[in-house]
Amino acid sequence: MENPFTDEYFMKKALQEAEAAFEKGEIPVGAVIVIDNKVIARTHNLTEMLNDVTAHAEMQAITSAANFIGGKYLKGCTLYVTLEPCQMCAGALYWSQISKVVFGASDEQRGYQNMGTKLHPKTEVVRGVLAQEASDLMLRFFASRRK
Image 1 (cartoon, rainbow, N blue to C red):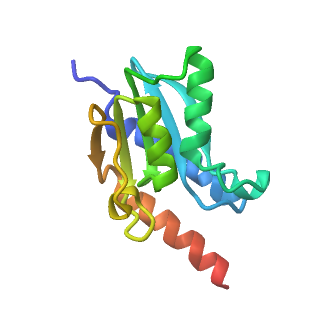
Image 2: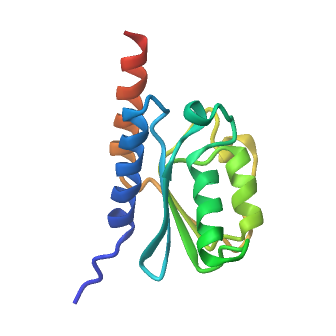
């Protein structure tokens, strides 16, 4: 029997979080952290609500997952995030030693790759999972802001 818990399955959960951010007027980035096919953190951007530039979805997810696990290292965990992490989030992911990062849309301007930031050498990276859906949500958000 085929495993239903694919990268697409969990990215859809991250997209649900991004939609929640959109509804709150936050930049629509959603994140979930999974261990053993179980979601242990699900969050979205909260920078506007918390008036905190560090309240990115990934930062919220790292904190939530670390609290769930009871430790600061996220070995064996996978982060699913709708947008490529920025260098701040990539730095936090580096220190968390997360095992895998899966992201949807690339961020050509502020993404960690173009900024020259690195993830932990043991972190596996998967790019472009449901990228079109994630990108469409971002475009819809910014189009609504320009009106």
